[in-house]
Length: 257
Ligand SMILES: C[S@@+](CC[C@H](N)C(=O)[O-])C[C@H]1O[C@@H](n2cnc3c(N)ncnc32)[C@H](O)[C@@H]1O
Image 1 (cartoon, rainbow, N blue to C red):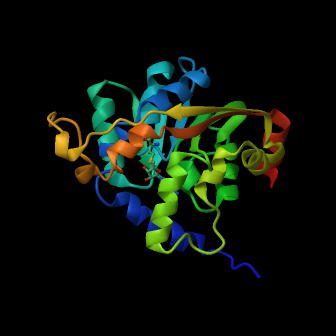
Image 2: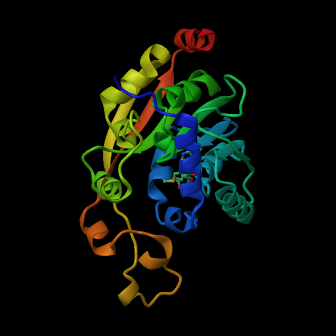
């Protein structure tokens, strides 16, 4: 019999992990997926946008440039939200950064035209509850967009190394990279969506080698925990970009359940 995971305990442990160090040092090197996703979602001025698991604000900032502000970013690490606020303030962008958890979003039903997540919601351990939450907060007829790492990409290999050294994921939880598979996403969203589009993309990851870094503004591997720059440069990280539109009737069905 498969053990039912203690999702609260897993989430609390993950929160501690994401709070360790300063992930914004890494995130500031991975801007393109946010810009690409915001473009694919065709965000319009005055649309209300939510970036789930926004970290230091990459997605929210990309969205706010298109929505003329009007954007909310949500993450469970307060220090990353603080970084996000600093960045938004520097660009005079109207973004509200709030503390919140992807499996229990602190927002009313149907409050956003667009809900996006860049390598964020995919990490929440209860994948079905997370998908249900993304559907719950988007308006009927709205769009959900995600950038997710794929199961056969470079990041999966990196995760496999982590698992080797940390003892593996809690029993019963599913690997986050399953979100990079179209069929899995289709099953999670079920009849809550009217249309699903996915696109596989390679993401070139820039990082500096500590021993050869002359530019002090570039974070080194040692400081920010980026894996060996050489292998990262040679193996582009593959991710899948997902855009899903909710249909009015199915979104209502979801709300009833
Ligand atoms: C790889 S980072 C991506 C951050 C940001 N979306 C970006 O593109 O730079 C993953 C982010 O997900 C957040 N996160 C992970 N699990 C979460 C959860 N269950 N609820 C809220 N945030 C979560 C982490 O705190 C972290 O900021």
